[in-house]
Length: 541
Image (cartoon, rainbow, N blue to C red; front, top):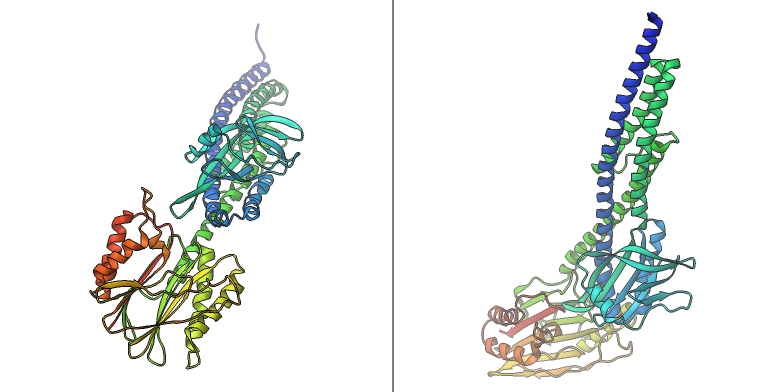
């Protein structure tokens, strides 16, 4: 039986359409599967890296202010420090709980996301909002061991109650040590939920499978409909499908390369359109996390600037001359900014004024008090006349510290004034370490007492006068050096400092400073100090 040309062309067209649609469906499914898996892996890696960056940097960033707050036992401030972290969890960062606890297991504070009613660490209820039990008095030993062994982060499952429903949720916990110098004060733990990431990844994989199945189904229908509608309909439909897939692939590729500003503009309401919407949502979230990271980096840069500014408030280290004094000073902060300072000034009558201060603690709060004290001292020195005295300077500085610190921080301070002829030394002390004096091979402390600056605005101070002579040497220092404890628990101590001063005091001030600091560095094994270290060696010429 002969077939008509029309039937042949029809059959040929149908076969061609079926083959084209079949080949196209096969290639589209293969490419779509490859692209979805590849871009899913890339976005997973980007989101996990962003989460790790946020988690690690947040714990490190909060550990710094937590140190001083734990030192002051300020539980309300510690709670206020953690609350914004868990409250931001509602906006996408997914932090669901945070806690601060001591190395022995004592819990200081716990905060959880507002939608969490209760959660457990181990077998014990760690947080219960319904009974207003905010934390356990002590972590169980097994739970404590698990937590402090975290290196970077750990993924664990925790039992959490939301809306009365108890569920086991997978979370990622980040841990950072809270240190006061080298002393371990405690730990800060922040947990982020991995539910959202898992749901999004499952959704992406499911949508990929649905898309492949949908593509195959459309290809079959296209092949059947091509008998009536012909090649034109098949081509148009193929182009419509491939256009969206290529657009989505291009957007995903740009996001994976770091361009988080690009967005999918697919308008279709099928699975491909939903996948494009999910890409846009994930890009928004990653961009928000990156912005937070940049903000924290900017804060660290500002701290570096603060350290540079503080260094301008102190004299340059090394040999200097002030009146009858030749002197050499040394300063080493324990953190980015220090709470110690020292200075010297030749007064209008030819006398020499040496000063040294030590604010409780160290870091940015102490540095701010130090800056206020240094500014006030410079102002008083610039107003110096015959009616001024060390006791008056100390009294005015005490008022300044009281108004600035408001009983939160205090300062020990000492001022020494050597007369123009180098025969009389006046000493006024506000709770500072007694300065050491070397004369005739004997070292003794110049005893002068007074209340710390910032304790009481009504405090008054007295001046001790000592007869001195050329050749006498003096050592002023803060407790950062005498109270330094090495790894074995041994304290450097004032006795050892006296011994080293007696050994080097007969030499020039630069040699004396180098010898004392060399001994201290041998003792500390060049480890970072736990407190600011300030020292000044002076000698009457």
